[in-house]
Amino acid sequence: MSFSPDDRILATGSTDARIKLWDVTTGECLKTLHNGTEVWSIAFSPDGQILANGSSGNTVKLWEVGSGKCLMELEGHNSQIWSVAFSPDGQILASGSGDCTIRLWDMRTGECLKTLQGHTDSVESVAFRPASSQALAESKNSHQILASGSKDETVKLWDVETGECLKTLRSPRLYEGMNITGVTGITEAQKMTLKALGALEMG
Image 1: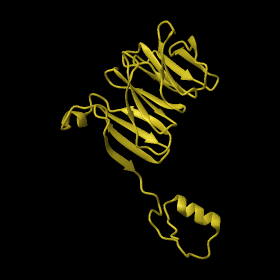
Image 2: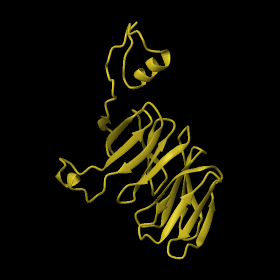
Image 3: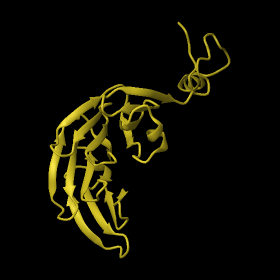
Image 4: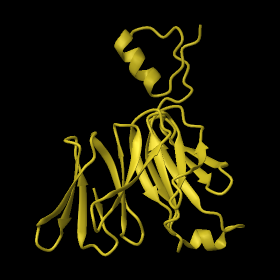
């Protein structure tokens, strides 16, 4: 779900393939948009005029909030779209997918500007750094930064202009690097749990 920038409208998406626009003050359903496939993510453009949604249909749809009309369908991903986000200036839309990639779309033309690759599992969250960020002001350049979170247990920071992965953030697992080769007195289930927490078994 997502609030409009003026906080007057709440957009909700559902597995029933519908998007509903609600008046926050009255609770009235203003519009129902029929997406056709399960809706997994929703985002308003910074000016509140456009609503983007990702779905199980492997596409991103752009809707005109005022009329409820579908303006464009963005195709290119090979799996469902888990997350969508607009850049602070509204010119770029990012989409994260189960195909392990992030795509950057030109909002004027619908063209895919870049495909960011590097994750090894589904990309389930994407977010642009706010334009007012102090870190941005102090950066050595003014390029926009996109963060992506994945089921591969990493967060990556990307330079939107170049497509370069600037940094990969990973939280160390509890038993990262511990060698459990030859350890006795534990069950196979316990051994699998230790491996999931970073332990290693050689040979």
